[in-house]
Length: 326
Image (cartoon, rainbow, N blue to C red; front, side, top):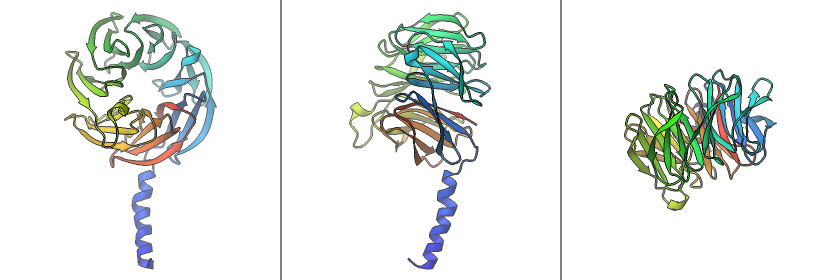
């Protein structure tokens, strides 16, 4: 290779490749490792694990407190939601959670935590300040996904065996409506304006877009990846960009993240990631997407603008949940 070509290659690498990995907003990524009973902590600037912290048994869902000072962790096999102080990285107390907590959602004001209890078919609502159960709501069989609308009016739960979305009126503390979806709904998320609810059905292999006002399915999306059999396309985690541009859907053992145009509902692309992609989180500036890959034990770092996977970061065994603090 000539000197001139070497110089050009160096310039291209310096001008293109490195900025793609550079983080515009320094943040910390937290990943729950289901098999190791640990939390991996990743620096977004170096994209390296800086610490591994022991937590409760079988940690799955994780979410930040409203002020970002604490992390809530579903310790499923301990039947507890643990609260970690992020400065000290210590568990400071447990919240009552009901049996087998797996996923939860925090109310917009940060006061109530809505927890799906898979083993006893209820949603447990905990006041995080008093650390007491505020109320419980009976739902369908094997409740899984949880979401709270931006206005705090609705809490929704998906039940895997009943194949329904249960609409909980928070003021009434009761289920007031149900929406039938495809088999084994696993995850749900409201759009930023609260006008839509996105729901994935793992066995059905679909994504349902539900109109919040009518609580009716307005669009059902099926995924198809060349070279991947349909039975391996199992939609789970969802992330939606705040600008309403993209919806990202983790497709489980298909080892891809689907990119959905959030306005037209057309599938724009499929991004190859690690094995059994499960959950995802966006960086504070939404320029990156972090996806946990359970079987390969790593986190895929995705450039949102370029729609390209930048790097894989090795973490613990069976990474499940992910949260990002700016």
